[in-house]
Amino acid sequence: MIKIRPFGIILLLGLCLSCNGSDDNPLNCDNALIISSFQYSNAQSAVIEINTIEIDGDVLTVQISSGGCNGETWNLCLIDSEAILESFPPQRHLRFTLQNNESCLAYLSRTFSYDISALQTEGNSVVLHIDDYEDSLLYSY
Image (spheres, rainbow, N blue to C red):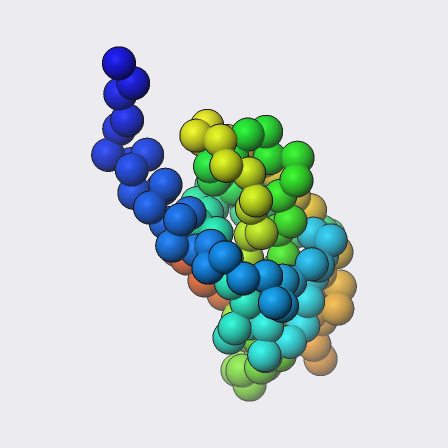
């Protein structure tokens, strides 16, 4: 008998709902940063859980979890909204999208790193707000 925990059912349901059977415009960012208001608003994503995020210099490192076989085929995009909120320090909004075509029932974690130097604005820092992540990040340069 296979036992499926309630979180597993929710994750599987989310994975099924995130797949619409049509890949007319799949986002293939090769695990990179994209600056695009259109992609920020419209890119499809499989269900992910953000475990940790940290910035070291110009590199943002994130650990996520999702369902899959081994996570080796995951394509995780970091998408900036292009909008820069004029405050001190300035603020930017970002989100992660995951293309996950793995259909196994395992729940896995994987770490990705991004060069975020393209997010620099005037001054020496910017606040990064990441969708579905509680804390804001201060990126100083």
